Length: 292
Ligand SMILES: [Zn+2]
Image (tube, rainbow, N blue to C red; front, top):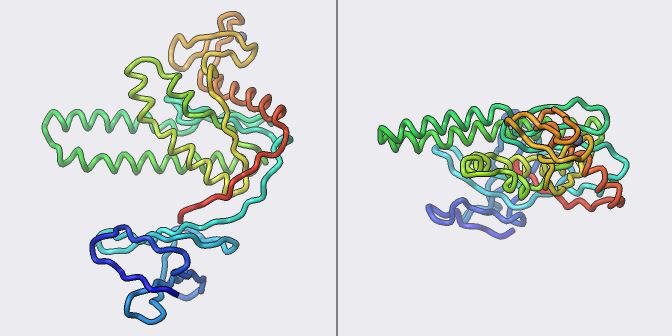
């Protein structure tokens, strides 16, 4: 075992390679996990008790760790790795996710799953903090503006975690494949400066990453397909449509009146069905890495 000098100020956060650390589960009274850190001048390193925020599965291997200092406490970020078997996806039901502005995620499934509209709070949170920042800016309260940023981020993060968890759990229960639209399509969908600003601040990338890693962890396949025209096409007959107001989709030739969000999700579902049956074979799933 090699020894690493704990630096005082530089090289922060400290990254510990996996060959210098060891993690053990010992169900002691104080803490369940112990981490061995190599410390300069201490033979064999020191054992530190860890209070994890979630269970660390035993069938995985340890990757590198990151040591982070927060005020008076130390946090260690452990990256763990698990091999997930490559699933066969062509016969599974599909859970389609459309990312939008009104609802962060609209979910619909191919096996009679009721549509769901998730993450409605994000828009309100973003509007509130946008408003707050503007007011604080007018009063030149810059130090307060700096403080509200992380609060907004934390709230949005929480919602992304909840929404992704809910989607992944549902896919797990129904044995579904998760299908997401690619994010390029969302950028294109936004027309005009105002919508562009709104859409570019939405946590789509974050939510997509959360869904991907949580799904990979459970062995649920995630397929990303093109989102082009999913908001302009009628899901029932494929005719061109428009959105006379934000929440409504209107099919031009068939006269379909439908929730715009759900219409998008249904189009993704339909396209995914075609794509998966044509691609047929199992899509290889990469090994996933999860932080705890
Ligand atoms: Zn139509």
